[in-house]
Image 1 (tube, rainbow, N blue to C red):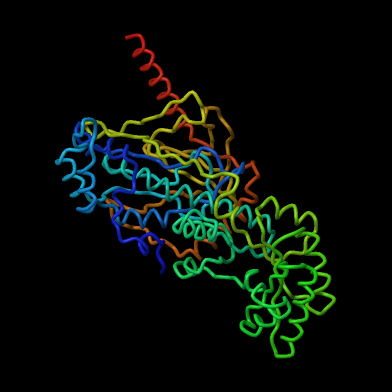
Image 2 (image 1 turned 90 degrees about the vertical axis):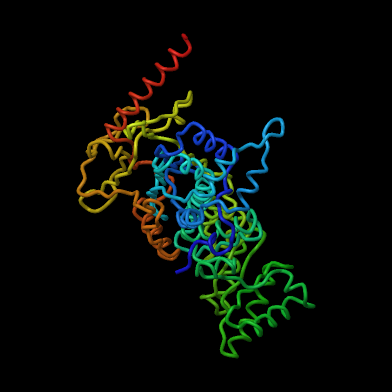
Amino acid sequence: MPSAHLERLYRLDFGLLTDLYQLTMAYGYWKTGLHRRRAVFHLFFRKAPFDGYYAISAGLGLAIDFLKKFRFSPEDIQYLGGLEGAGGRPLFDEGFLNHLQRMRFSCNIDAIPEGTVVFPNQPLLRVEGPIVQCQLLETALLNLVNFSTLIATKSARVVQAAQGDSVLEFGLRRAQGIDGSLTATRAAYIGGCHATSSVLAGRLYGIPVKGTHAHSWIMCFDDELTAFEQYAIALPHNSIFLVDTYDTIQGVRHAVEVGRRMRRKGYEMQGIRLDSGDLGALSKEARRILDEEGFPDAAIVASNELDEYRIEKLKEEGARITVWGVGTRLATGHGQPALGGVYKLSAFQDESGKWEGRIKLSEQEIKTSNPGIQQVRRLFDENGTPAGDITYDVRGPEPDGTIWRQDGRKMSTLSFGRYSGLLVPAFQDGHLVYEPPSVQEIREFSLKQQQMFGKLGVADYPFGLSRELAEQKKVLIEEVAAQNLNSRKE
């Protein structure tokens, strides 16, 4: 089964895949003797991307690849030993560097499987272990989960806009680097795209690859008709002709002429591609010509700066496009450059080993975090339809069907038949206990999830906190506020 691409492309250990401030905090924990205390962090996003209501979780496979190689090599330690602070003094003690080199990943990781519909403030990952390790994982986990979830969600939006038509991911040439392109292609496929132009991604993940020719092929010949004919001779089973190099409608007629010649040899033209101009009007005229000339099954592929909004508009105009090639605006997450996921401490053990909730306050209510060791329970009605999500603290009582808002107000009470916990064990004491599904299996699961929840813009699904977690949050807010007030008085 193909793994995620990090392990297959990179030979380096991943200990240094972090920000310097994570290492300085880790050093501080070590210096103060806190480094072995256990902590719980949650990775979540505060607002669904692209003004939607939910997101498609992705990136767990990449995170697993990273965690399997999370260690510091001798070369890494040598590099860290050369870092200097003020006055040219070494930034880190030799003892701390020795600790890093001996350290082996030993955390417990619970995660929501890729392809799952997820909502704001729900933990996509729960990380529990020695705080020094939990802290060092933050940057890389956010990097891997944020971008993948963003692109999987964008892909789902595009696929939903296409209303059952095939969607091809064509973003390699415009993506942010080699790894960015591979991550984007993997996530786009999870979101629902049918194929990709990226051959390397096809090899790594078994994703179907699609592509025919570009304008340069046409321009290498004296005329367009000859170019189409020579392409058909070379690849008779891959005959989709790009018709807009010179004159689009004349290009369609040339494609028809070559299609007739192919039939006489026992082959069938597969279709045409439009890459410029008024795609709606041109697709209608192209469809008319193709149908009248006896090619009703020929596909009309469209590309050129497409996204969900333009696809929806073309659909409303009655465009006759049957395959959508979406590149730049998909692979780059056009409209929202980042998901904005965060990674927050929510519980910390005291000296006796007792867990204490932790919370981050903010003048912005949306940035006040949730405490505890969290799990998400998805409730289903008697028909098996999702009815609502409740985030709760596993140390407390089982949640009932009452959902509370982030601000502590009661939202609704649901009746339900069964439920499931969304976070599942991925690592226990540093050992992988989760068998990642193939990307094809994740995509199938994602499409089923989208079918259950409907369009990403629909905002009628209830989700929030359990009563006990909402109360714990309220108490901690009051305690922290009181502590800050006393500090100011002193």
